[in-house]
Image (cartoon, rainbow, N blue to C red):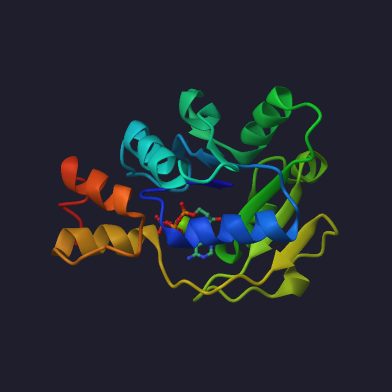
Length: 187
Ligand code: ATP
Ligand code: MG
């Protein structure tokens, strides 16, 4: 599951858990992006990586990969999948994303090669209706997951306005945000 994870929240974790259950996955690898090419200002990668580690630490099937943050330059999903495939040549790869992210998939770099590297799973996301007919490819599955209307953008805004983010993100992530004074200047 790729993402900016700025910060990781319970929407990400529920989506990952539901896909793991439905597709009988052995492991979910969370892959924080390096500098995402669609987003210009993001929190330093080490903070996003550590919050992702904290949020996933208690689940024996959840791991975190540094492939995107250790690669120089913009992050493209094709490179993420190539690197994961190289590290786990015998694994069947599934790429988990929300309805908003999958909708852009045809615009991604090397879209055709993406299909050959992984099976794509699009999960439902409140506020982002997905027309399933817009996903013509047989390598994309759609999964309805419990609706959590949470976004990292909203969490950053809440921290900036002094609103609580308890119960939207794992406790350890709340404490990490406070300890490192993250998102104070967001509105
Ligand atoms: P931002 O607001 O900064 O874009 P975000 O909440 O969308 O943050 P991302 O890191 O951009 O989080 O998302 C990573 C992946 O998780 C994407 O595929 C996205 O669609 C999916 N996702 C994020 N939040 C949810 C949610 N509440 N329910 C289902 N999927 C989600
Ligand atoms: Mg997003």
